[in-house]
Amino acid sequence: MASAPLFPLEARGLGVILGGHAALDRVDFALDGRARVVVLGPNGAGKSVLLRVLHGLIAPTAGAVLWAGSATRAPDQAMVFQRPVMLRRSALANVEYALAMNGVAASERATRAWEAIDRVGLAHLGKRPARVLSGGEQQRLALARAWALRPRVIFLDEPTASLDPVAASEVERVIGEIHAAGTAIVMTTHHLGLARRVGDEILFLHEGRLTEQTAVETFFKTPRSPEAARFLKGELPWHKSSPDSSTG
Image (cartoon, rainbow, N blue to C red; front, side, top):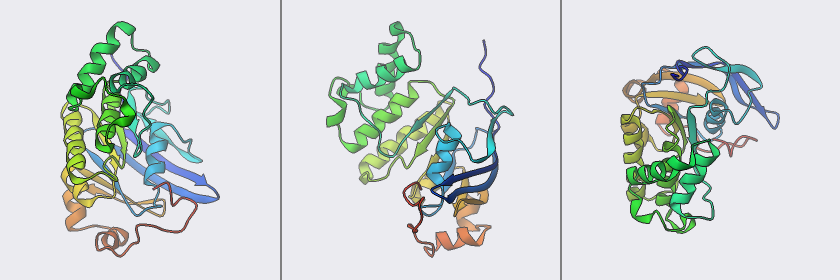
């Protein structure tokens, strides 16, 4: 049976209150699933909260997330966090465990897990304990773990944060391959160069509000909102003092 359509993915009047603070405030947009979408904004703007709401980890205080018009959470999706949790087992077993938790038959798990870690360039480390891998290798393993589920959309929260340039470049390569294989990408980043290279479309958040949704080149050349223009000039602080300052 064919999978139900996922797109357009819509946010309609999304609001989230955390610690008495509006982490998201009346956010509206629609994504078609073709463009690689990058969510930008100062720390505390609500970027990570938005991804968690879209993925279904946080219930909105107001509004709704709609998948092709349905408020039912779509199953064909995955999320990779800035600091992925590695289980106390091999790299391969980490991927197999994710497959098992998502109902993949035991007869398929090893093949799919090997395929996934090979795609991200970690086949030679498949038997090594995941927790001894470098930060960049762990992030690629997290991408393999998500990709093995064959999702139609992956949410990525700061996937290259704290990585050195070589490791970040490898993660960027994998993200490009995931998208080329047909998986939609929605990601946050604080790295403007990465946003420009990887993104097709920008969602810009400021103090929980979406002030701009536009093509990446338009955003960087002629931002439409004063908040985005100030951000690109470095006039908005990366950090702000608020209960949401740790949630992007």
